[in-house]
Length: 332
Image 1 (cartoon, rainbow, N blue to C red):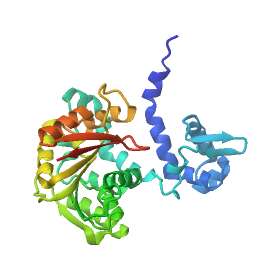
Image 2 (cartoon, helix red, strand yellow; image 1 turned 90 degrees about the horizontal axis):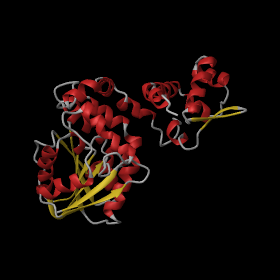
Image 3 (cartoon, rainbow, N blue to C red; image 1 turned 135 degrees about the horizontal axis):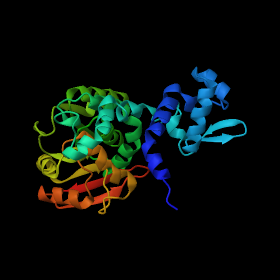
Image 4 (cartoon, helix red, strand yellow; image 1 turned 90 degrees about the vertical axis):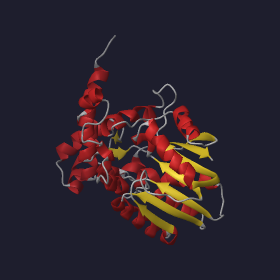
């Protein structure tokens, strides 16, 4: 029998966002991880009403972020590492970017974006030059990108300790280039991004102990001169902001910057050819519709064609464990 349940789940999906946000802001998950399980104890720790805590925690139990026992609430084991503020995998800080006023405005104007075929929040959306949202991104998204960065460096280096030059485009937090420098003590990294964003990357490089092999190149990746002779160029979470022709323009610059036999390593949300699977990459295109003029989630066939058109010989794709991202390695 037909049921409107899915419709109401979709219409009230913002309640789940609000509930998770409230629990993070109140430190409810951390309080539970510390051993407080009743609404009264959690409320005292978080300075919140026991009634409010009970209703919030029941909702989060239905949503499978918590479990309810005779003694009270406990964290769901699958999500616990990402919700406890004391955990190195804690992701509460990502809300600074994911729920920022800029990103919220993009979603709220979805109807207009669909009509227009692109963002309506400003002339270029989040691609406005030196947009402040990218400094928020650089500070907020570290927990989400730390493991993929280590995996990409490990996979690409394959144990190599040879001298090499890495160009990290749209470096943001800098974690991808920094992972190469950490895993290979002879790797030198040049990071490209807006100046304010590179301030964050510099902080992370300093903390990682690789600042002596970490060079900053402020400016637009489309405008500045990269130089030549790089072994690897990293293009992480960047191409999805632009149309295919613009991507090819950048990829041609990447090709010219690489030495013979060099590689471009791209991290993207890459849907299957049907564009409706897997769920994470397939639904990512909607975020690009709302926040950019012509961005998209490109299939591997589309990315492969872009790189071939730019002169690359071949490309290979690899899934990133425990992540919606996929790596495309393209060979010059």
